[in-house]
Image (cartoon, rainbow over all chains, first blue to last red; front, side, top):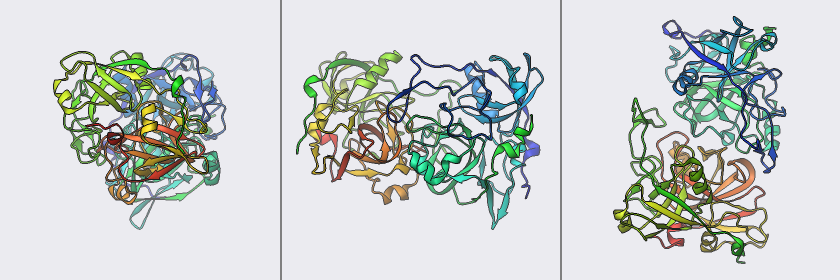
Length: 288
Length: 292
């Protein structure tokens, strides 16, 4: 494993803050599935006790399930700072309530920031509890690969991914490839903000390609996707991304994919590795 | 074989909007968007009265981001605007109800989606000269609920009876709906709008990779062209599904942004492949409705 030189020593470490979100639904609560059948399902926000990074992304009786704890800031601009400054792998500290002092790890960004705490900490957490994140990673760049944009990658996560340089290209372990034709909801957003869902509606294709084996926390690659300044098709580009939320019943939706590395020219390679999950790299589930 | 619809059962109802002012971000008033290469650009985008771009003109080449041809309308009241965006159908007629262009008639030609949510109308250029931002425009909305007899697997969205008859759709020998289109869009070139509702708004052809765009014959589209979307289901939201086929109108122009390009207003979809796109030149709503 090569540890690549970065500008880590020049990054600024800064606190950002949010509170644990209450799940919310719009009356009458239905989400339409691909056949137009209304479903009422849990998923986003709150403290999710039993879906954790490392668990399957598919198969839950849920829609867009967000593993662990979802936090947000009620002030719009402050919430954007929470979104844009927080990086995957950052430390998160409970600063009030029964679990005060407990430390968690940022594992994703969806409509809210997603934080993993150990199960015994989750038991002591309450909706509304304050969580402070030590945001660290914005501006991170490889010395040797200025063509590769790093997004929301903390040095802690980056330094634990077994990267290699092969023939002048960066080789990244991933669990699977996602074809660009199944990349859906989120194409309308800039790629600094939240995620893009893979479109899982063609269930037979998910099985054919093994995508239905995806786990929360998996690193994946999208060939021919340029995620530097949006999420678009470009032959020869590649995006390395992270599965941050679970599957959906809605057409055009599915597990959420958050960009970690982006290049528009063919400088990123990948190797299929079933262990390419941030649960392993950050030893998330070893925290009892 | 020509088709029959339940047009005699459809309700015709008023929806009103006002000519929308082009908008820009508030303080700190950073005016730029970023193109797909990360370069800042400042160009006209959606909204307003566009004097010199109309359906029938090229969808490409304008110095603009997703330009709306003609006139864009919306309603400040959010739920009222949703009513406008959901019920207005491509081909519905509209009349100017206030201002110097009072009494002039136009036609709905498209819709725009998340972040703008306008209904886009064609008025002749002389009428546009008399219009002002804020003028009230009333649309006789008709089409939601329409079905084509014998084609239960085909859902119609934002589609007026006049569009169905004007396109001269027919039933093929194998029972599919033949729909004339100028081009076919493969799923990997569909971007923004995926996962969002297909009852209004737009789904964008993405145009960053110009060589790919040209290789599939999508680089000469005109505003108002009818296109097919392959392996894309738009029954409820827009999304990938093998065998599904959609039909849409090019409602908005090209964009420099990643994931964006000409915006498609969806008018028909079949999850079960019940639509047979028939590629031919010159299928454009400007001709269908005789728009000048």
